Amino acid sequence: MDYMNIEGLNIKLEKVEYVDEEKRKKRLMAYMFKAVREQTKMNRKEFAEWLGIPYRTMQDWELGKSQVPEYVLRLVAYKVQAEKEKGRL
Image 1 (cartoon, one colour):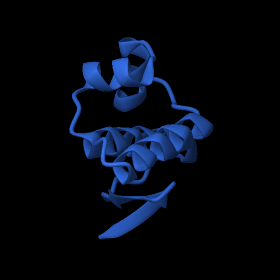
Image 2 (cartoon, rainbow, N blue to C red):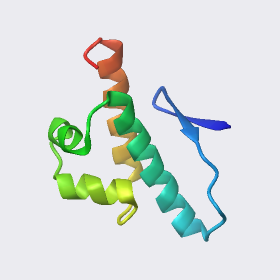
Image 3 (cartoon, rainbow, N blue to C red):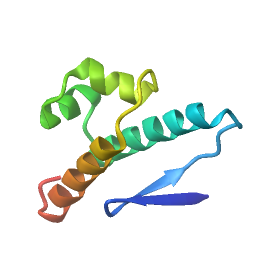
Image 4 (cartoon, one colour):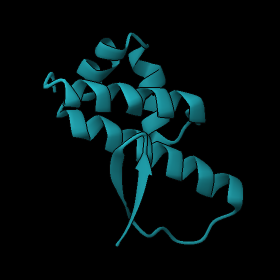
């Protein structure tokens, strides 16, 4: 099983059937965003409130309906990692 490190968080990657590059990237970003959230043990509503973003936006990112910007994913992963290091998560 492959892993990807994003801002200090190790995310286990699952194999996905081959799709075009744009769809693959959207799926990967959705998967990674959800994996970052799952490391907090928060549900979608709690995570959206904690980040201060609309629930629907976060839900669309996780479901791959819209693509989370890479800089947002990195910032969120950084925040999660920082809070874990401080013992707050």
